[in-house]
Amino acid sequence: MKLLLVEDSRSVVAFLEQILRREPDIELLPAVSNGRDAVAAVQRWNPQLVLMDLVLPGGMDGVDAISEIMATTPCPIVVLSGQLDTPGRDRTFESLRAGAVEVLAKPIVGGLEAVKEFRERLLRTVRVMAHARVVGRRRTALRLPVVQPATSFVVPASEARPCSLLAIGGSTGAPPLVYEMLRVLPSPAPFPVVVAQHIVRGFEPGFARWLCGTGHRVVAAQGGEWLEPGTVYVSPADRDLAVRGGRLQTQVSRGLAVPSVDVLFESVAGFYGSRAVGLLLTGMGEDGARGLLAMRQAGALTVAQDGASCVVDGMPGAARALGAASQTLTPGEMSSLLVTLARACPSPSGRGSPSA
Image 1: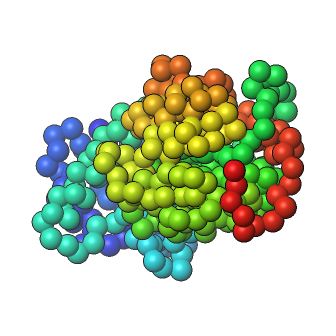
Image 2: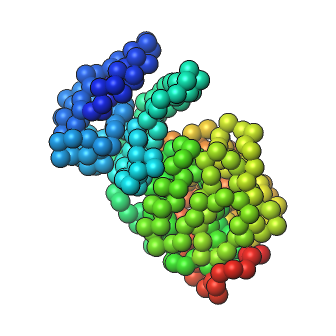
Image 3: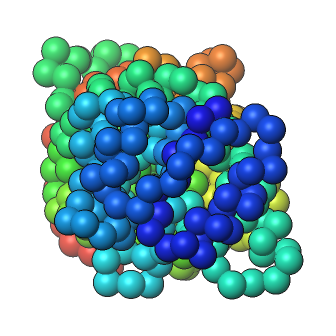
C-alpha cells in the first residue's frame, strides 16, 4: 500500500512515520508539506491513500488540495485535523464535502495508553480505507457539492405515510450526504430529525455548526431534550442516543460503534413505530442494520443507501442482507423522498412542546 503523508509539522511527520514504517504492508512515499506539492505527488505516485493535514502553507490549504486531487486524480484521502476547538474547525467538515472519506484527530501529547489508542485507530482506518477500492473510483460521483433530487422518483403508495420523526445513521462518507439532504429538506422541517453519525469525540459541536449551513436549526444533543419539529439533533460522539417517551436520552455505550445507530433506531421503533422514517447511509461495519430491521418490523419506512453510491457499503449492505430496508435508494432519491415527506406534513406550529 503506497501511502502519502501531507503535513508541514516535522514533529507530527516523525511521529506518524514511526508508526507507519513498522508495518510491512505500508510503503511510505516521501512526505510533502504543502497543498500544491500534494497535488503533484498524487499525480506522480498514484498512492492508495493520502493522510492530509488541513492547515498547510503555500497558498493552497488542505480543502483546496483535496478538491483539486478529487477533480484530477481521485484517491482515498483521510484528513488529520488539529482544528478541534479552534475558529477554523468547520473546515474539517468542508474537507469531507470536498471529497475526503474520513477524519482523524491529530495526535496530542498523552501517555502510552493515548498513543496506543491513536496507533490502533490510525492503522485500522488506513487499512480499511486503502483496501476499499470503491472509494477511489467512486469519488468522482460524490465530489460534486450538491446532491440533486431525483425528479423521476415517486414514493410508492405502499410507503406513503405521515412522518413524525426522521432518524439518520451513518459513518464513513456520510457527513456530506447528511448535509446535502438537509439542504434540500424544506426549513423548518415539519418533524424532528435525529442524526447518529460515527465521529471523532469532540468534533460533534463543529459538525452541528457546519450543518447549520443547510438553513436548519441544528443542535448537539446533550440528553433530556424534548423532540421538536424543525430541529436537527446530532448525537454525542462518546455516548449512545435514544428516544424515551418523546425525549432524547444519552447512555454509556456498550458497543464498538459510537454513537450506536442500532440503539437509536431500536428506540425510535419502540416509541414512534410506523410514524418514523429511518435512513441508513454509507459506513463501515454493520451498525444500524439490526435497528433498521426493528423499525421496519414496527411499520416504519426504512431506507438503505444503494451500494453503488456508498463510500463503504458496510452498514447499508448489512441492512439489505437482513431485509431491513423497505427501500434501497440513491442519495438523490432519498433527497426526493424527504421533500415529499415534508410536503405531506403540516408545517411546525412552533417550538416548546414535545413531538408525539
